[in-house]
Length: 144
Image (cartoon, rainbow, N blue to C red; front, side, top):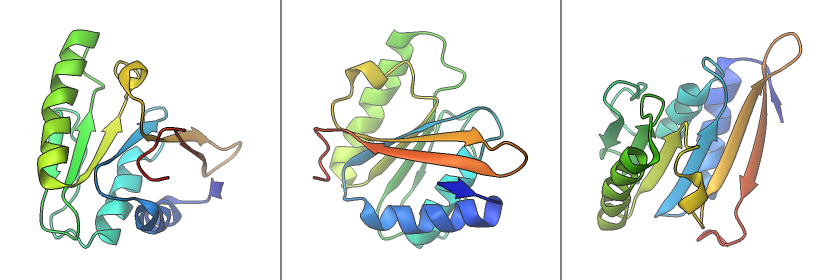
């Protein structure tokens, strides 16, 4: 799917979250500046989250509990090894289960091999402007 600008990316995130059930995991893949956090901002709007959604690159994760569903937004960009990534993921996965929420992970490459059930959103730059979004649902997804 082609999205022309940030507004369309946010709107798409808002619509996308309507397909998501509690305890789902969404992996966001794409280069720096592709619109991953903008997409999550749209998801936040779709969940009626009151807090401002920002990139968790330095904090590693942000939790939002003011909306229709608890949202955990992780960013593994600064994590350099699988063990650290998996430890952080397991902590956040426990929060996901306890709070019946949604876990979104930017830069998930280090943990993707251990996941059986997830959505994968791939974002790439379009030829001249805008972004291309491809969405995949794993065969073992809890959303089936």
